[in-house]
Image 1 (cartoon, one colour):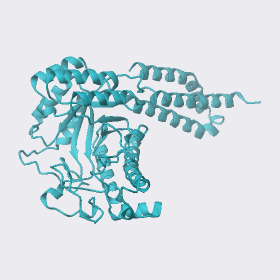
Image 2 (cartoon, helix red, strand yellow):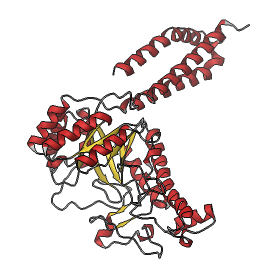
Image 3 (cartoon, helix red, strand yellow):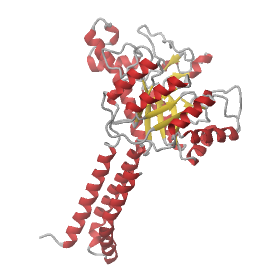
Image 4 (tube, helix red, strand yellow):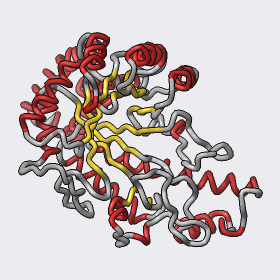
Length: 428
């Protein structure tokens, strides 16, 4: 027959397990399409815009964002080259029209948090910024065609891109992410989470594909639909696996991760743009998606309809750009039908009328939908730590009176703590 002390310990263990499981269950169900909470409002800040020459200018911009009712700022920090003094990047992008004697990034983080804003760092992936100046120091990382020639980008301000499959490239960008987290941002947003406009035939990709499928991609073309689908799948999985790696690092710090994604997830056999971005499989990896739909009103509304018809637990945000106020109004109304919020692009060029329109539509600042996920997981992790501690000191429970008294008291207050925690998360 079980002794009373053993029953008490069993009760504690069971209660902690139930609470931990319940918290996690709530976390993964609070942002479904049918159970949305607060509206997310992201403002993108371009650190290289030349509008932040002094701390006073940054203070004014943060006040403006706060008064708008936004709840998050996304700071573009660069990638291979950075807009801040980095210890791991290849250098700092020269900002020719102004100089500053303070850490622009750290000041933005500090002032944003003082206003209760979530501060994210936007990391640009794979772009070789330095190649624009003729620097070929990292040419061994470039995306190359079937003949081994570097592929130039269709984007005017980008010359060459790095291959996402090369381990050294991945390790480098993961180090940038870790550096950003150490600076105190609330999370990371990954931009250009995709390939260039076509596959990369770099030696590492060729080797890995050949090892897996027993044939080199150089030995078949698009006309071989079966093998080409496998080649596309290889590219798509390369990007997805990087997102997994980044997600693991970010979530290990109890921070958030978001991704800029195309308006439709691309899967093998349909990837006409050659981006290999199957973000429909990232729902359990990232905390939110920033859908890059910059088209006219018709295509914008088509994307809204698409998002409404897919089951995503992670919140989705759609961009609002400075344009005709009537179009902005219709886009905002469309967003509120299915998405979880908006991201405001080109904030530096937002006119007085556009700003006032958004301010009136937003009414007041609210919390982000996905903030609860990390809050819940933190409490769940804490409860599991409590469980481990109890199991560890159990042998001392019967022998040490003071521990026995403390544990008996804790048995009484633990349910109250659990109820208060649930109430906090539910009504927050």
